[in-house]
Amino acid sequence: MFAALFILGIVSLAHTVLTLPVCPRPPAIPFASITVAKAEYNLGEEITYNCQSGYVFQSGSRKYICPLTGKWPSVSLRCIPRKCPHPGPLKNGNVHLTDLSYQNFVDYSCDSGYILQGHKTSQCLADGQWSAKLPECQPVICLPPPVSEFSVLSFQRLKPGNTSVFQDQIKFECLLPYALFGNETAVCQADGNWSALPECRAVQCPRPEGIENGYIDLLLRRPYNYRETVTYGCNPTYVLDGPAESRCEKTGQWSAKPTCRAPCTIPVKRATVLYNNQKVKMQDHLKNGIQHAEIIEFFCKNKELSCSYTSPAECVDGNFTVPACFKERGIVATFFKTDIADLPPCENMN
Image (cartoon, rainbow, N blue to C red; front, side, top):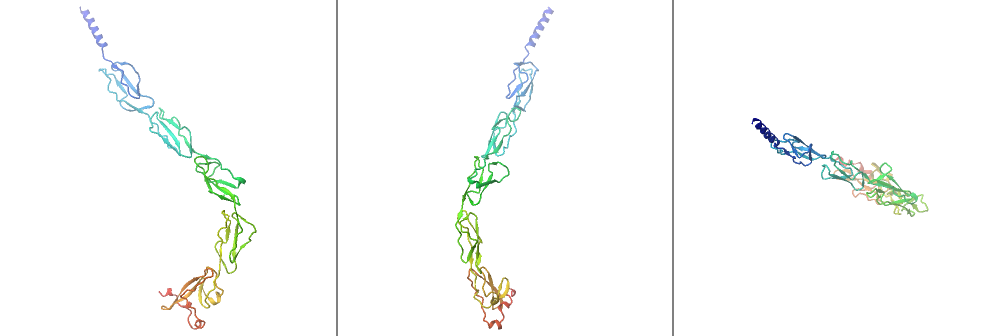
């Protein structure tokens, strides 16, 4: 009887053991996986979550144990996409992106006048690196411009080197007697072409005309070429007003020529005046007059203060006007009256 009861207890205990609860398959977590994936887990069995490739741990717990209740506790693990560093900046170009996270793409473009060297697109990989390195934006190259007929048009680069690239400039010049028409410089443009190129044309000017009361040195009996010059001079007592040289311009005309200005006679017989900052006698030193643009300062009298002051008069192309304040003295007065020039200066009377 006892043996039967013992066997019945053993069977009951085994049934109890066999009916202990188990934990089902644990909940799926976005971007994470379990080290050992099974349909059921025994009480006390531990599981571990790991973030999948391309994702990194953000928060929560990675390890969980199957409890006596047979229900997994709330899983708090969060995995987020790994981020790649910003790939830029791209010199002379632009970086186009919306997200730096795993599997996202970045696009590259270059500014006008530059060409992309490298990959146009790159993807953020699982290891946090970009699939392709940052490209470069290389400037557009312009070929040397054509040289015109007879090689009269030449150019020089304004930057060192043998290659001209976007925004580089070259300067042109023509060999004489050709004149340059158009812009002196050209710019390498974004399309690889040069801006408008100038041209060289032969230019001649007719024989220059003479000037009144003057002459042209070594006047040739032929037309003159571009940039050739002639030199003008004036007859004695006349003064050259303007540039002494006139040049054949690209218009086929001469640049401005000078004028010969006439001297002036002084309508005063006797007077002491200032000439070149020195007191001189008109009758001794200036009886032949003065040249154009020269100045004489006449002495005038302030009767109230009995002092003298000066008033200038200039020779302008043969025209000369004596200051109104000046009073010429007769020959007798010059012997018996004090010369106005010898009176004390009025500026010393203040």
